[in-house]
View 1: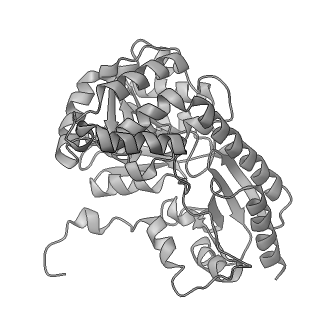
View 2 (view 1 turned 180 degrees about the horizontal axis):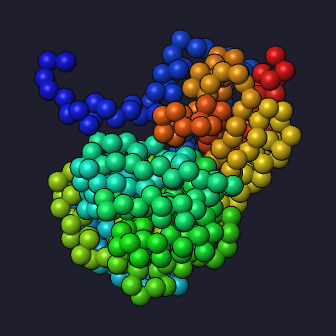
Length: 393
């Protein structure tokens, strides 16, 4: 390479989903035995027709939809999220405490840019969401892995032992990507108290909150009048409304922090997509029942996954929820090698645990993530059959 390269970027691993797609090169799949792709946690179907119509009408009739908007997002969408979240979580959230971003990944990057710089530390439970790790690597921030226990749940006491003067934040994802675990409200509260005590931030990424199997609020952090002192909430509109290509996410944080986040967002994007925000707002106001149906379908697929792996020889379910199942396999090949072999030998594309764990981590070579949101009950039955057939072979 003729020009200098940022060493932090050079040291960051390649995007896992893109790497996995390269495993498909040169492999053909027959119509009778098509590829089962459980590698990516994103809806493949378009938004419902009524939402697409709303987007089309805005594109045709709203001149503002094609111009720059406020850096922190449309006031209408910020206000709607603040009102709905206040009701859902039993707290008080103001529109001024909400920012709209180009997807939830950007929300994480923006929040983290206000918290940590080169040489600082951030605690991530393992298995972790790989894009979180990638951003920390690019920013020169040291990732401190926190091993999880039964049910893939992290332990606040173990996290406390990892905190140093350089620690700036703890990051939780619930429902979890990649593990599927739904963190109990009391566990999230324990991490919040840990963050408050040590004067660090607790970031909770709730991208998959719309597919939580529990009723009621998943935690009570917003009920604390002082939540903004230690808590940062992240959300994605992509999954609930199938808006992945429109890139719409959100941050809920204190107004002082959002003033700093505004600097970041203005520099990297200027403003979020106007059409995406219009779509998200329309969805929040009109698609409550439709989203409930989507949730019911995902929960049905979760039940099908649990049933499929209950007695599947050589496979064990470590966690299952939202879009994900996290499993162990008994194949003698390490998971990175086994995942590539699955494409050729079973027509299945899934990601190995090594993409979600520190290098050399115990157990990673036997772990896999299955993103089942785009596989219906019949597809899950076929997936089970192919894995069972491979085990017998």
